[in-house]
Image (cartoon, rainbow over the protein chains, first blue to last red):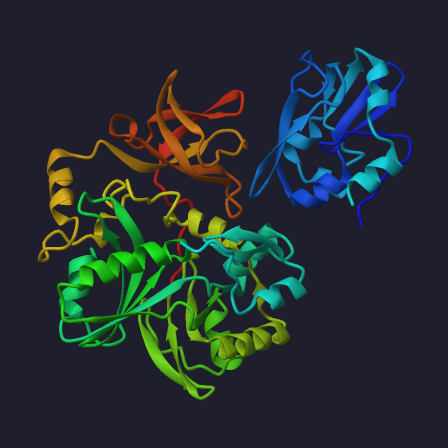
Length: 125
Length: 365
């Protein structure tokens, strides 16, 4: 069964946002990794990249397919999770711990448009 | 063309095993049961079984059976004995590929053609149309036969001991008819994984029983189409729809060894003789990337800023860990070691032309 963690924000394209003050961590959800299968490559953004809410920021690839990932919020990338370059399958081990990018939120009010854990769990049914 | 999605005789068993089912070639087929990587490695190291009942079978019989098959097929069957199997293609008059297939020599007046699932209707129409000028009978047996592919280094032992079918004396690319279950099975030492293995054709009833025995023995992993593709790709085998299609000739696909231009007339021969004389304008090559980014079907191949080709199949190779692809490229950039790059989403990744065999086959010959 996929995990759904309270206190995070979720998008309809299966990314999560974990807010930490003016920063946030963005990755794919546990449900998303379970659907993808073993992750073999993560196409990461670069530090300093700016994204609008809903803009593609990279891709997560399994053996069979590439899935684009979309930033749920407008943001500036301050750090990428370099561990995923050598061990992309960390996303399968714990998708919420192994975020893809740490960002500075450009418009925190956008978070209100995302789902909470209960709504997202229902969305995945 | 059939509008409804077809199922194989093992469809309920795949679902009971929790397989992820996908449409392929007009059939609902298992993509994977657990994990493509585990299934891939099971075939490379031990034994896996694939339901390949979606493949089509056509029997050609009659006084002119050999003459007819020679006319529609690129490889040369002349002088072959019972039990021999040939790989080759059926072509359009312009040299484009109708399908790639196996031909089993069953007798002086009997041949058994094994064709791709997605092409059954197209191929059979082609065969029937061409057969009008020959003294032959053609039968589409695709709905009768189920088929299992038991693949991997342990497959000989499994087929002998678990299924009780004699197979150890078969050499690569031969078959025998084996009586079992009150019917006549066809057992061949063939497959499409680059490993030793066998393909078994029988009634739906037999195939279901055999599948159950393989599952119960605990030594065979059920394998889906996901790893069937990664396995065939790593050893440079083409897939119709990726490397081959109606507009690609076998010479462009690097399959010239299965095209016998010195035999009597066959459909497409003139076009291929001409293409060979004039020189190819494009061909399929291997490309290895420096990065782990994954080139996929349809991505552009670049020489500097210029588009010079397209990826036909690509993966991060499970057996080698390298990101590699097959690609159809212009002939002037097809030489080994030519630096080419591939556009993957917004970025361009550098690579180099290699042979299109990324992993060594281990057939038992």
